Length: 196
Image (tube, rainbow, N blue to C red; front, side):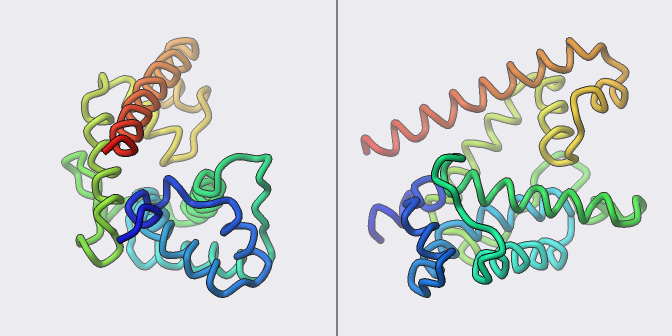
């Protein structure tokens, strides 16, 4: 396994994303291989259904292949772009679905559903997921809860404040502090991973 595969989604070369959007078969395959695990996991976490998550993932990659969406280097990393596409589509689908069906297949113990190892993940993806899960689990409950509501449910800070019956300033503070801790953990992980 080469270095690019070990770092998986976190090190997708922007040139691959650009070439994939221009119809380059090899680049498209590389983009898919390096990003599908994290995108599937995200869609699964939001939608709670493997079938729905797979549909969202297919829609995202079909749009990339058909050039309906294009990667712009000036708007962030390729994985950030793909995550935003996937998250937006998953939240749109979630909002359009029956509220009774929301998250019916998610575990109720607060753990994140994961794909069977090896089926959708390489070792680097599993390690990254472990770092993120541990960091989220170690956050104060208020920080973790606001991040999950913002990221997975697509709620705005004002909507989170209403749902949690908290002042808006408190919600914004929880989001900022939680995201700062998550960013710090990921930065530390990537520095250690690169020096290994």
